[in-house]
Length: 421
Image 1 (cartoon, rainbow, N blue to C red):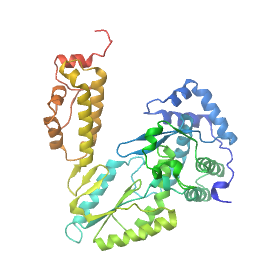
Image 2 (image 1 turned 180 degrees about the horizontal axis):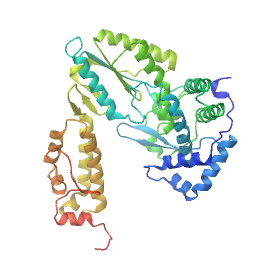
Image 3 (image 1 turned 60 degrees about the vertical axis):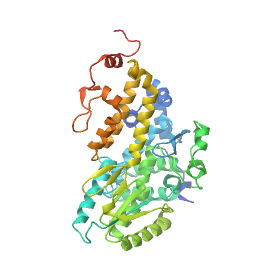
Image 4 (image 1 turned 45 degrees about the vertical axis):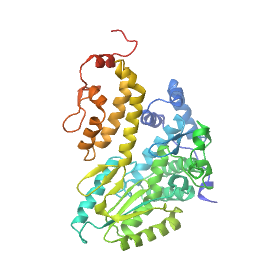
């Protein structure tokens, strides 16, 4: 009997725990139709969910798959809202068991971590290497795992989960009934592939076949977009982290999901590390490295998580700047007539405000004052709507609005269509 063939018993979960998971699942999310239907009778739905879990009848529902094109074309799977509640129930209880064994330099989908913290850590490592031989800061090796989420071997992942749960149970950190319940939920999520509803068949056809979950090898693949998949990614790559840090003794190593960087003294040393990592991934985790690894001097900068990172400065990745400029140009093309006639709607202004806010938030983590000034200088229409401070920031005049020049166009902007004057 393989690990994914064992029976899954019921989960002794309380209604209070289901309620707390429901609050976490809805926090900060724009309501979907599935969520609205759940919350129309939320108490009944929570009681039904609790009963299904306790009876051992719960199974993952159908997911809705759609395609996003930024930062790259990929397939996203949105679970139904009831399943999202179960995902929060599970992850909330697994995190305390795995956090103590995760290395410090793994930054994806962990509390107090994130992409900006990963960039800061990498930059700190680059500065540390400046004081170590050889002169110039040494070299870096940047690796990525081929088709990561679709290649995750679910029985291997389930074995890692069960191993940790068994250890926690033996040490007395987890009651046997709780360990059994957690294994049950993990089993239900991994034993079979959930049914899929494709939102846009034409868009899905544009995704390469090997990137689609339905074409993953038997026993492989996790749906991108699920909270559990994000957590399981750290579980399945924790053996790699331990191997790099404790077996290969790589001191300067940073990982974010399946993108990781090693710093070393020489290209020859890092090439040897790459060969050892590739062998470990194949033998232990049934994964492989993506072609096109980058092995360069640290002084050339490391393209990592939207930034080009140097020891003492950061630049915004050129691709991010081009994408932001294209989106600004698209907004301007659509709203040019309204700008000229001073009839810009509140909705269009809010869209521009959100667009600038997202990119300014990213730019603020790099040395980008000159970049932000250039973006305004090349688009005079932005200067008619917003004031750019000397430090490159957009200052707020009220909690909900950035400071804008007070002229007739702004009065049109701030008065929503159809509202009384």
